[in-house]
Image (cartoon, rainbow, N blue to C red; front, side, top):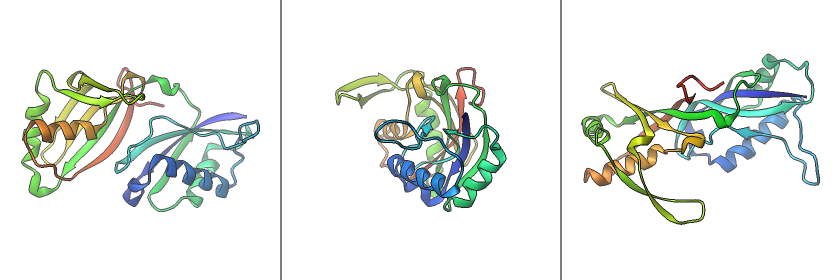
Length: 214
């Protein structure tokens, strides 16, 4: 048996598929592909899948990561990708498969691309001004439903602006995940701006040294 790390994209209409439904979809794709996937043992046997950092509903992603296990050590990574793509729906493309290098707990940052509609292009300057603040206190529910306040600024590693988009590198994984939706909500509220649509695409996952997660 060998562990396999699979990199894939989630684009287009697939962004409207929740993580729970995405897991169901992946299970169907894996079964349809016919690859020799490993099932957990016990009473309720199921395909082993581990997602690095689940993607939020409404977001696209071009560097999504999931781990599976194969029962045949000699089954190639290339054949794994080929069979998965043959069974995948539109919007899901499997890019590569390889042996895992780092444990998922080593994920520390995620890079996101934020794009406003052209008529709202003036908001990039306002967002830049907002993110230059020394502190922005937000409220968030913890897993027990309790409201906690925290400062989002220390969780923003970098913010770059290139005219028609913003690139934000935010803390992720065990470092404390900062969702771009929370950043945008705070931006609209603090700057007294009526919320507008902003597309969000996750471009990369990094370790603590800002190296691509492998």
